[in-house]
Length: 258
Image 1 (cartoon, rainbow, N blue to C red):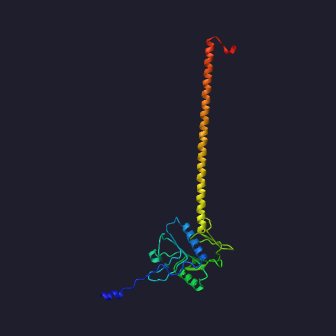
Image 2: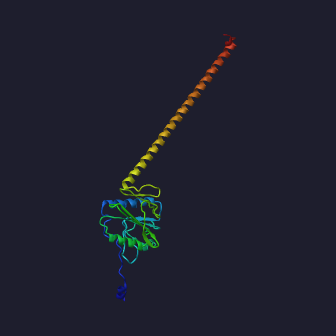
Image 3: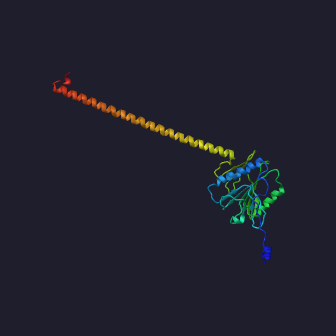
């Protein structure tokens, strides 16, 4: 009986967290993966149910080890947090809606065709491919159940992400929904430093203004005290003169006759 149960048991499927492939093949590819992933994290930082990942294995179907690791993927409706891989059946069966691939010289046309078929079969709504060496940008949007090529990518605004794609003679430029350009990690750090410096300057100016205000108030108070003191001295002088006049009148001396 025990042997029969053991014979009927299916082997447990292991879903590796790594496919053994490097995240990137060169510095340019890595740079773009980081730029896109980190700037999207900033855009959706305040939105709890937007999960963004870079080079994370995505398993669409339980029982199958078929997977892909988009350079960057975005899943709306799923909470942020740590994952070893994205197992869709554990994510309320929500597929990532947006995928990015940054090409390197090692990517083959066959490999990219496989990726397109995979993303098309498993519910990706928007798929963007950027080749930094050839300065080529390609985009796909789901229409009628299929991913169809976007005719004009220059100036394209992602319906889901709200970001704008602009191609220049030298590179791709991405802009957030507020029109701010995507920044590198170095530029982001410099921006933070500049913001901190501006904050410190504003605080120093505020403190200086407060000190100047307090100094002016002290000067005003001193002026008022001096004015009051002068008035008191004048009143005392008038009183002394009046007293002297009264004494002289009693002695029969009229100052007006002098």
